[in-house]
Length: 91
Image 1 (tube, rainbow, N blue to C red):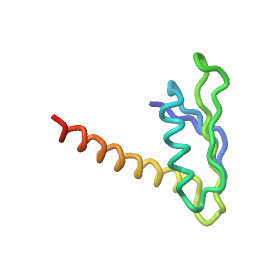
Image 2: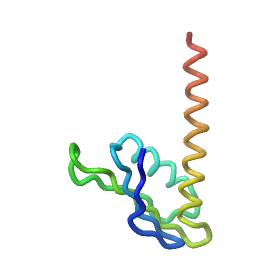
Image 3: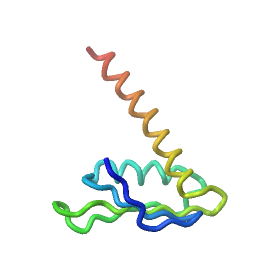
Image 4: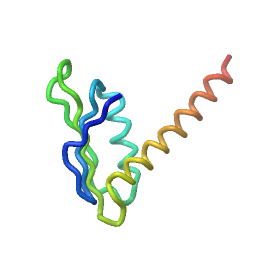
């Protein structure tokens, strides 16, 4: 996966998620909304077939936007690992 930083300040970041779709974008947005320091998290995708999602994160300034993104990715990894463990128990 390729990630392009389009804009960045301490409390704001705008990223392009190259060759991704709503699946990852929506999961990240939802997990970012669980962070108490994230004021706004969202993404846009201009065209469902030919455009890349643009993810935007705005924090309250007590946590950097990058740190909020890193933490949300770590939480998603843990959730996915737990889900995979449950799936393996079904075998």
